[in-house]
Amino acid sequence: MKLSKVLGSVGVVSAAALALVACGKSGNSDGNAAKEAGKFPAATPKKPVKQGGSVSLALETDTPFTGIFSDELSTTATDSTVAAPAEESLFDTDDHYKINDKGAATMKLDRKAKTVTITVKKGVKWSDGQQVNAKDLEYPYEILANKKTQAQRYDSTLEDIEGMKEYHEGKAKTISGIEMPDGEKGRTIVIHFKELKPGMYYSGNGYFWESAAPYHYLKNVPFNKLQSSDEIRKRPLYFGPFKVQKLVRGQSVTYVPNKYYWRGKPKLDKIVISVVNPNSATQAIKSHKFDIAGVLNSQWEQVKDTKKVNFVAQVPLAYSYLGFKLGKWDAAKGENVMDKNSKMNNKALRQAIGYAMNLDAVNKRYNHGLSFRVNTLIPKGFGDYHDSSIKGFNYNLKKASQLLDKAGYKKKGKWRVQPNGKPLNIKLLAATGSAIQEPIIQNYIQQWKKIGLNVSLTGGRLAEQNSFFDKIQNDAKNVDMFMAAWSLASEPSQGSMYGETSPMNYERFVTPENTKLLEEMNSQKSFNHQYRVNVFHKWQKYMYDEAFVIPMNNSYSITALNNKITGYSTKPSQNNNGHQLWYQVGYAK
Image (cartoon, rainbow, N blue to C red; front, top):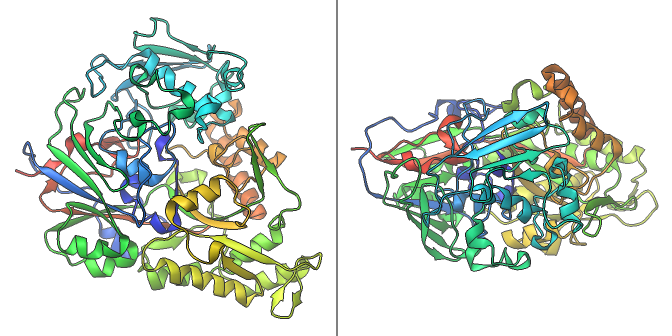
C-alpha cells in the first residue's frame, strides 16, 4: 500500500521491522536466507484475547524520531512505525494485496468513464468524533499538490488526475478532477483521470491517495506551516484504533483507544512506543523490558534462546541500496535534472563500485545469513514481475578493475584518477545504526580501495539519521553516493521513487528510456498481465545496466513478542496499510 513506500537508512532497516512487517507475502522466503529463518511463524499463536492491558514497543534508533504525523508529509519508515497504532488506510486488501471492500472505504473503478469512486463508510470517525467526509478524502490531494507544503510525495503520477497539474502550478484554486457529488459533508468523491492504470486494483500507487486528512482540524493551518504545526507534530487526528495521549517529542508516544473507532473497541488499553538505542536492544529483549521489539539480524544469536518470547518473521517487500548522486532537484520546474558533468555520471564507474562490494561475505559474518544479497529492484515477493535471470553485482574485483581500466580510470600512484586526469575522491553518505554499521561500511571502503578508488565518508563519519535524510533530500554537494533503503508499496511500480518528476528520486537519474519504461508499466497495454511482466523485466535489465542504483540486501524482519500477546500477524489481509491492525492485538486470557 502507499504508505509503505518509505525511505530508510541501511542502519535502521532491521530496526524498523514494524514499519516493514506487512509489506511481504506471508511466509514468503526470498534469496538465500538462513534455513533457520524459515522456521519462524508468520503470526503469534491464536488464543482468546482478554480486554485491557498495556503494551510497550521498542523503536530501535540511535536518533530522535522526526514525528511528522501526516501520511502526506511523512517519508521515513521510523515515522510510519511511530504512527502505526493510530493511522489507517482507507482500504483493506486480501493476502495478494488486492483492494477489497472490508476497509474504511470502498473503491470502484470505471475504465470507460476513467473514474475512481471512493466512498467512506458511515461511522468511520476521527478520534474527536467527527465523521470522515468527502472533503477529508479530497484534502490530501491539496496538501500533496500545493507547493507551499513542500510535500516529497508529489510527483507527475498524480497529474493523471484532471486539473491536478493546474492546481500544483498555481493556475487553479481547486482540483477540477475531484468531484464531491453529495457535497463536502457527503461521504463520496469521484476522481476523474486522464486514464486508469492497471496497478490501481492493488494500490493507488501514487495515482490516487489511500488516506484521509481531517479538513475541519487542519483547514486554518497555512500550507507553509502545516509540517511544523502542533496539529501535525503534537496533537494529530487519525481514524485508526488508537489516538495520541502523550508525546515526548522524538522519544516516545503513548496511545489510548479511539472510542469512536469504527471496527470496535481495541483490546488494549494503552500502547507506549519508546526509542531505544539499537546497541541496547539485545538486553532490552532478554530482560523483557518491552513487549514488542524488532530484532536486528546481527543480534539474533544473542536473543534467539530468550524465554517467554515468540519470534515472528517475514521477508518484506523492501531492499537496501547504494545510490549515486547524478544531478539535482529543480524545485522551480518540479523535476529532476541530471548533470552530465557529475563525478558519478559514468556507468562503468558505478558498475565497478557494485562489483567490488562483498555483500555475501558481510551478510554471513555480521547478519547470520538473515540478510541476503538481492539482484534487482523488484523483490521476489512480486512473483513473475521479478526477473530471476539478472545475476546482479556479485563480488568480482577483477571485473571491477577491468571496467575501470577500459573506461579510462587509470591509476596514478595509489589511487585512480578520472578519465580527464583529475583526482577522483568519492564521498559516501551513510547513517549511524547498530554497533555493526561502522565496521560494515569500513569493509566496503576497503574493498573499493583494493580497486584503487579513494572513497571516504561524508564529514569523516557516519551521519546522524535526521542529518542523513536532510542531505539526501537537499542534494548536499559533499555527497557522491549514499546507502539507503526502500520499503515498497504492495504494487511493484516504482515511478514515485525513480521518475523524472519525483522529488524522491534522490539519485536524480533521468533518461528518456527510464521515463518510457516507467510509464509503460502503467499504460493501457499493461492491463494485459504478460505485457506488463515483460515491461518490468526490460526495466530491471535497464536498471542493472545503468547501475545508478546498486541493489544490496533484503532481510528477514524479525519481531520479538511477549508470549502473552496474541493477535499479531504478518498476513496482508490482517494488516492495514503496512502496519499491524492494532485493534486485534491483546493479551491472551
